[in-house]
Length: 397
Image 1 (cartoon, rainbow, N blue to C red):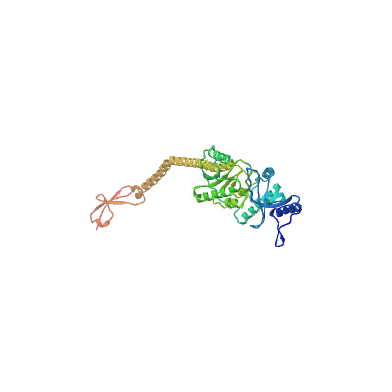
Image 2: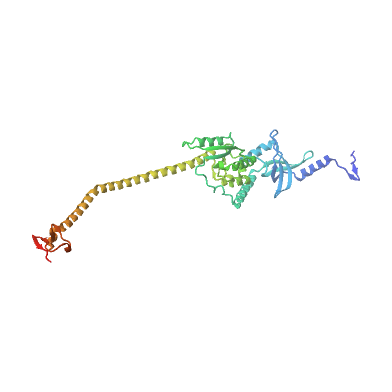
């Protein structure tokens, strides 16, 4: 016999389970098959001990949440889905990514409405990641900072290096070993700033370390970000705006070697110098010293060559001066002999005999030459010498 339904003010009263099972039947009848649904993972909620995952999915309009729904990925599906997702995108399932999932819409009387995800298409997420990456690039270019770090001048000898890495990582070890073990004996000073290097936490870790380094920027010539091993999994953080913008606008040159071999990340693009491996970063720094060394050796060679040429020129000048000095006494003697000859000719021409030959005479009184007639008196005897002979005369009057 059918049980009479309870009423309230002539309205039937239903139990919660009745409503829940009714909704279950309506949903089961209305949505009999799985559907492709696009959404964003707001929270992943993965539980390693059980292997189950309970993502919170949302659809946003700008920054506002337009719709929100709970989802379930049972452990049997999660491992398969996540492995393929890593293989295709290079990242595990995580929060704040867009997905295209194949899900059944189910309403459980006990647990309520949920999307039971059977599969996730990684290529859709990959496409969304590419779109986000391109949007970040365009934003940085529009802000005029995309090449800001590249335009910084690297110090002539980048000796003092701030390193962002993990002390126990192989990448850090390779970097330090290559840098300090260079065969040229160049010496570098490094300081490690430890940080998580992959996943969403890397953004906070690396940007935080960069802030610390900026406060002490006078102590360093450049910054190096290196990691090694682990493939490309979890490296999408280097395509995020916050990370790339911090590196692009950093006041010191930033060199990256994060092992992102399949795709060049946005952070790599905006860094001063990009290298695939930490070892390559070390070689790049050593290269600055090699270049300087080569220039010094080139200048040294030029100095030696110029000095040699100057020495040859000066030796030639000295030889010419030596020859000139050797000839100088001969020239001087010839000049003096000429002068003596001139003097001799003058003396010869001024000899009294030559003067007397020209009709001149010399008159003396008491042996003294008469130069003034007033000194004579009447009766003085004079002797006048001519060229040939002598004449005697007496002063009269």
